[in-house]
Image (tube, each protein chain N blue to C red):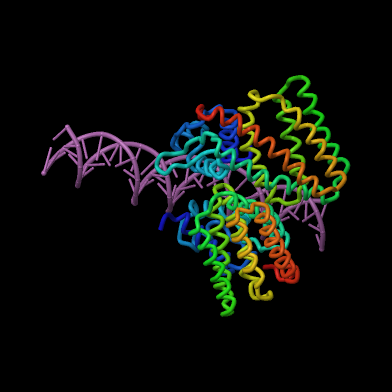
Length: 218
Length: 218
DNA sequence: TGTCGCCACAACGTATGCATTAATAAATGG
DNA sequence: CCATTTATTAATGCATACGTTGTGGCGACA
């Protein structure tokens, strides 16, 4: 264990992500601290981080509240992703990428296909995350990486809820293959465009589902 | 005063921005705390924020170091701005903007021109910041606003140093006028393109200057 | 009965003390 | 004289105590 802050941060984040703690829940710093067996100091720092990531809201005098993921929030997250991720991918395409890295991407995509055949949606999601994470790591811009990673995290929270409410994501894997090819060819412009379309489509689908669930307050 | 954290944060940030504290300086949390007359707890939180903004680096066991702005860092910052700000501007263009808001933008641009005629570079920089800040406020995406604002802050640090080392920025004001017109027409695509070119040009100029000053370690 | 004001409580912001641990210096053995 | 190990120091991470301040409840007065 690296430290109580990371511990509390990681555990609370996981609970929020998996809806182990219901959205909307509100408690004082002390109560959160008790729950994770730490004192207020590290708990406070953990909550501060989560608040910066948009998972938690700190309400003066009332403690912290687990934010429910609203359609509006997801729209914000995806709008930024739509602008940034294609740019990051284009940067990767512009650089020289090792064949090893490319096969890593292909492997992740293949795992997505296999998972789909087996109807294992969790494995699919995990492989999809892996694909995007690998691509992210190839982008040299550390700041961009951090920003995108935080946004992806938030989008994953929504995905974990909607995963079983949508038709199977066959198209995604095909788009991933196209993106890999664009990168291999070093075709900057097509990479950007393809990735953007990939994200726009994903966003539209997600928004439609969330819109229907709006009243449920997730 | 709102709190010792904001106080320490704001003061240290200002000092870094104006080079009141030299880049590269390294001190313990306690030393920073003493300097601003607060205890370690709020000082730590302030340093944490500045670290998230990329202005200081927290080195385990050695305290905090004021980061010198490197060419590489500025390249990162601008690459993200180039991707995000045009998108934000396009969103503004897509929405209905009040004539009042537009005239606010025009006013800022006019102040830039006047400042240039008077050779008042500080006033020019201030008006330029104002233009971008106003535009930012019109963009409905709160997350995007925060991200861009943080990046702009960092770019301003570089600008304050290079401001007097470059030829006078006549072209910027013209580009601002074009952008305002695009937004008024609601021309989404041209807004995006024009703004992107605006940023790309600014980035290129800045990079060229910083490249020449590389050895100075700012 | 409704409203205004006061009081008690609770949460937070801040300060501080203590234990942990990494870095540096010292000491010992080769 | 150098390498290795140990001891010391110092900075952090964490816990906790305290003062401040906002909030909600209770009572008094209109």
